[in-house]
Structures are given as structure tokens and as C-alpha cells.
Image 1 (cartoon, rainbow, N blue to C red):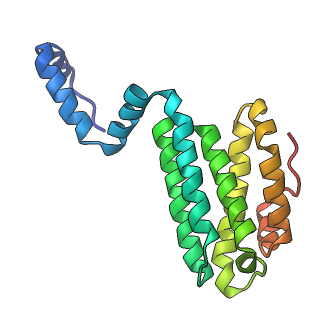
Image 2: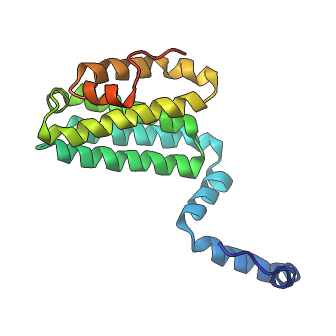
Length: 184
């Protein structure tokens, strides 16, 4: 983003307050992410964070349970859900929620789609690769969180690692260096 010249900056600050307010509103309206971030921060507040997480939990649980004709169908859904989780984190700056929801998504895939994750072969490789990489990434994100959060996430991480290492993704997890156990 180009910086304003000192002269233009000075001229902007000298505008009447009403004109500055109108300019600000027009500029904010042009950026949908900024608009949603401001709406969350200014209108909803931190009390809405748990509601947003609960809504995402529901969105995660429903499509993962259903029947998927191919592993790629499931992979598309998992990627879409992961994008929603990432967007949630971008809007709310909820690092813990991002990790918690990602762990929930990955655990639900292993729980509800055992036939699609049981064997590593041509059709399942992209899905299993994605699951192994996301697990690795979630563990790295967990390390960045405060140690108190590690205790809250330990059970979900342990469950995910157990399922990952019992699935067809085990060789891929080994390549990535995913540990077999999580230590707080």
C-alpha cells in the first residue's frame, strides 16, 4: 500500500470532521474483511466469540458425517471448512479457536469416514496428505499458544494423533515428522 505524501496527509487531517467521517466510512466499506473485523470488534464484541465458534462446530460436524462418493469429494469439503476456520481466525484473531476447530474437523474426518482414510492408495493420497499436513500445522500452531491452552487441547490432539497413526496417513505423517504422542 503506497504511503501518503506528507502534504496530502496534512491536508486530510485538516478536513472538517464530517468530511473525514464520510471518507472513512467509504474507505472501510471497500474492504469486506475490514468491515467484518470492525463489525465484530465494535458491534458484537468478545461475547460473540463463543457463538461464532459454536456455529462453526455445527458447520464442521454436519458435512463430514455424510456419504462421500470419492475421497476427493471429502477433500473439497474439508478444504472449504478449513477456509471458514481460517476466515474466522482472521476476523476474530482467535488463535485458540482456530486450533480447536481444526482439531475438531480432523478428528471428525477420521471418526466418520474410516473407510476413506483406512488405506493409502492413489485415490486417497491427496486426502490423506492433506490430513497429515493439517495435523502437523495444527501442532505447530498449538506450540505457539500459551501453555494453559495445551492442557485444554491435549485430549483432542492425543485422539487425533492416535487416529492419524492408525490410518493410511501414517507413512505421510512419518515423512512430515508428526509425533506419535503429544506432550504438554
